[in-house]
Structures are given as C-alpha cells and as structure tokens.
Length: 381
Image 1 (cartoon, rainbow, N blue to C red):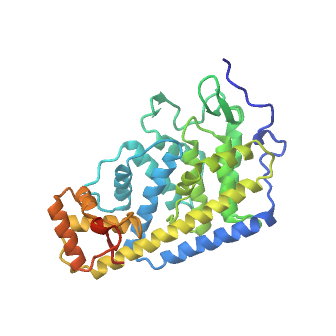
Image 2 (cartoon, rainbow, N blue to C red):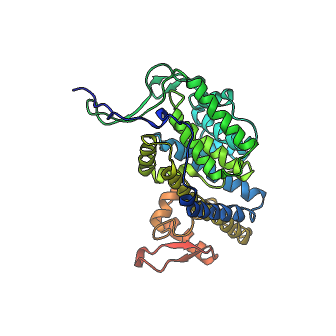
Image 3 (cartoon, rainbow, N blue to C red):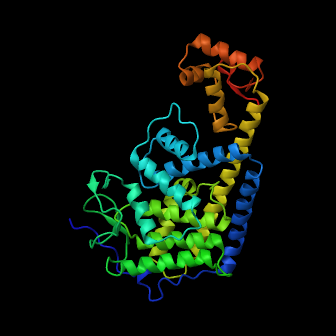
C-alpha cells in the first residue's frame, strides 16, 4: 500500500509574503497582560532568595528543562544523570550522583549557553555547535546523522502513523535556499535584541522565534530542542537576566498534544499567527505560575532547615525530609508512612516506625489525621 500523501495545499513557508508574520494585537492584549503578570510575580518572588537559594532554584528549573525538552521528543533521560550534569556546571555538590552521558552534558551546555550568554549574537557557527553538542557521537539512536551542519537534500517531513498509513504533518522548506532562510531568521533575531522594535513585545518575539525556527527545520535532528533553547534565549533577553526561573519546556510537555496540534494548524495556514501566539502566551503564563510555586517551595525548605539546624537527625531522616520538602505540600499522597519510609531509606519496619516517631517528637512531622492505623505524616512547614 502506498503512503498517504498530504492533501494539496500550501505550507506557511510557501506563502508569497513569508516570513512576514502578522497577528491581531487586540486579540493578544488580554493573554499577553496575564503572561506579563505571571512573569512579574515569579521574578518578584525570586528577589526573596539569597545567592545559594537562587542557585538551588535555578538548578531545579534547569533539571526540569533538560528532562522535559527531551521528553517532548520521546527521549527519556535519567533524572539523576541530568541532575549530576547540572550540579557540575553550576558548581553544586555531586556526591552520590551518577556520571552523566556526554549527550546529557551537551544538552545542559546548550541550555546554559543560550541563557547565560544571551547578550551574544546567535550566529550560524554557534547554532551549529549547539546541534553538534546534542549528538556528540554523531548518532541519533541507531542512526548516523549530520551534525554541526545543515540537513541534506532529502525532503524533511514530520510523519506519524504505521508504515503504509503514514500521515504527513509537515514538510519543511527544501534544502536549496536554506542557508539564506536561516541567515534571514538569525538577522531578525539578533536585530530584535540589539534594536527591539517598539511595537514588538519581547514575549511575542519569543513565540515568533520558536515558530519561525521550527518551521525552517534546518537540521537533520534536534530541531525541537534547539527551537526551545532559542525560545529560552529570547525570554532571557526579554528579562535581561541569565537565569531561567520557569521552564517553558515542562509546560509544553504537559500540553504536548495541543502543542503539536496548534503548530500543525499554523504551519498549514497563512501568515496570520494569532492563534499560535495566543497558545504560546498562555503557556508562558502557566509555566510562570508553576515556577512561582517552585520558588515558594525553595524558600519554605530553607526556612525549615534554618529552624531545625540544631535538631539531631540521622542521615536517613534527613534524606526522607529533603524528599518531602522537594515535592512540596501535598506532594506525597497521604503523607509519609512506615511502608514508604522503609522503601525510601531501605530500613526495617521497626526502625522506620521508631525514626518517624522521633521526627514527630522533634517537631519535624505531624500526623495527617487520615488513614487510621496506616496514617501518614506530613512536614511541619
């Protein structure tokens, strides 16, 4: 059976006025205002963090960003390996963490370079270096790919479905003329930071950058991760600071189906990208609201350990408390109980029961009051 062909139509990059995007400013006004408000709240909350806590919050967001930007592409990274790489690059303790694979280190390098050095121009050589860093062995899975250079002459398509019944979601611009297309994008991106137009909001610019780059699809692999890194760079430029306090990749992963849906509709449409920008700004708002909770949790964790800095606790108890503090309020359904404590600390039932009782006596935990004989405990925040 022959593969189904895409229905005859023009892709957005085939429009005569490509890439002159347009949008309805009035339609975007309310969602843009909400995104700005959420962004301002999370940035305001970070002002309460000292240097150490800021680094801890940035590390948590960076780990989440690394894991989720790969998960969007169907690649599952070991969280411990990502945490190890982040800790090493940020100068945090790495004791007990695994040695990360080169590809994980490469991903973290890209994410950090995009935000730490947001003032530097995004030139082709830098972009090529990012793509090569994602694939240090020259392989994507079992397939050898071109790295550090543009894709080849073969048609670049996004396809899903079983063999014989494939569905074409998108066909990228042809290889011929791709250098000029990429040069035009990079010139726009760099000029937009150096001399930002008064009528182009920074968050809208980030959404346009994501759409434009992912539509060009200039590389054989890694385009999605690079589009999100470029988006993070645009957000860092908008905020004028090298640290990301909210993960847009994590939010896109949570809305993965709607992400691919609105992207496909936009790439099959004309140059009016209002629906795409509406979706994008909504995700900025949601990711900032989630991050505000992360920052608040970091502060709460710091206050807890300040209060218990002189409390005599063993290593198992500290490990369990940190786990509870990391997941935040209501993060452990039903709280921590003897069975969960045994599993987390690999200790006996008698020891688990005794050490949990000690934590209650020392004011670290309080019974949830639910569950009868198997009642759990929660942190005294």
